Amino acid sequence: MPVSGLGYGRGGGGGGGVCKGVASNMPTACDHPEVVSEFLEKELRAGRVFGPIEDECLPLVQINRLGLVSKNHQPGRWRVVVDLSSPKGSSVNDGIGREVCSVSYTSVDIACKRVVATGRGCLRQN
Image (cartoon, rainbow, N blue to C red):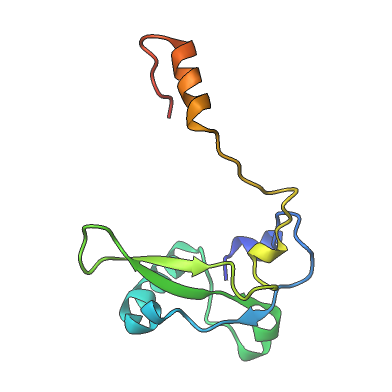
């Protein structure tokens, strides 16, 4: 469980209440349990997650499933995916209201117009 959720709640203006549920890990995580264990140990040491969780606490927490995606051009290296969209209807993401947390991207046309308007020597800001 993410530690910030303990002190600050689910945030994002979500539907309130405690999100409950447990989902099985994705097949990739089950195929490489050593990668998942290493990830969880690192996150525990960094204080970004906590555990193990006592059985009596399980009805009060959301446990998100994990998966692995291979890193491009790095055979045997994995990126861990924490699925915040599962289970449908009671996921962490389902509890975040669109009105308080949405993303929109600019178009290529607008980006090009801004570069042209800035003129020669335009530098990208980080």
